[in-house]
Image (cartoon, rainbow, N blue to C red; front, side):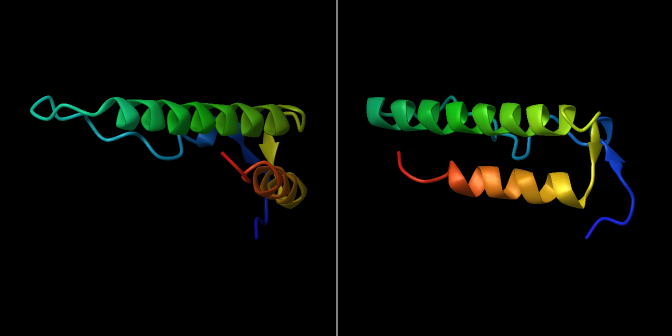
Length: 79
């Protein structure tokens, strides 16, 4: 639990950076499509989190953390 509000600038822009791609192996078409879908979902989740934190004047507190968790859980179902 957070004791004090934390400003959004203290967090990195991406939650999980993608590992560097190895040029030796050729990725299948299906793998490239899957990776694009996953990356798109990651960008959308980050955008949603930035929006929710931005609505709280850039501060992350317990209430905003709860809203973010609820929002991500509600929108995480289904491909």
